Amino acid sequence: MTTVLAEHLAAVIFDLDGVVTDTAAVHAAAWKRLFDDYLHERAMRHGGPFVPFTERDYREFVDGKPRYDGAASFLQSRGISLRWGDPADDPNAESVCGLANRKNALFNDVLRAHGVQVFATSVDLIRTLRARGFRTAVVTASRNGRQVLEQAGITDLFDAVVDGVLAAHLGLPGKPDPATFLEAARRLAVEPTRAAVVEDALSGVEAGRRGGFALVIGVDRVGQADSLRRHGADIVVSDLAELGVPDTPRPGSHGGQP
Ligand SMILES: [Mg+2]
Image 1 (spheres, helix red, strand yellow):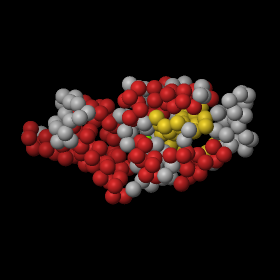
Image 2 (tube, rainbow, N blue to C red):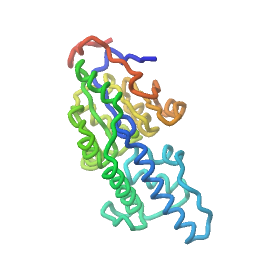
Image 3 (cartoon, protein in one colour):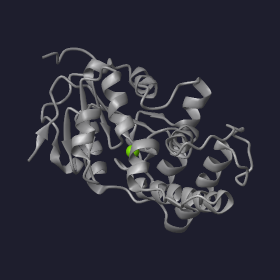
């Protein structure tokens, strides 16, 4: 089944991990290794039961959020309160920032070992969109965003990139706040009402809805279509091959209103 993107759209803004690049699983695995080690060590220390970090924990508390927010959100869900620390904290520090930095080191180990995989159907869609005059941007909470794009060789697919480094520099709150998506729309010179957001995280579709975007497309690769809809997706696809692009060339920055 194909859903054709509406004619009145002028831009499409993509999340990176799990939508364009197949790095969501790498992030999830790195978080799991971090938290399972930490929760285990804590259980030994305090004598409580060891309850592992689950895929559900990842989706509910971590996915799509800035590194430190995700770590804090999960720890809070387990009633663990740690000092926030500082982004410069050593990865071995027992602080929110320390733990999140340890996760980042694990993530980079995997990236170095395996490289970055892209979803070919996503790249195809983006190339078609650009050939037909749509502007495109990528928004990711990841501070490794630029590095991931370069390693995957797809930097030229986007007119604008808003990653975790830029967001921190501009003081923009992360998803589910819409600020990073709105910044991407601003950089594309497109009103949110003429832009679509494509996201695989619950926090991300929520950000798309809160930002007042014309269309929020949820990408479901893990069987959470209902949750994506509840958090704000207008439609849910399992792969971007299900999205069609209007044949007519885009009218540019004017005209094309429905
Ligand atoms: Mg994602």
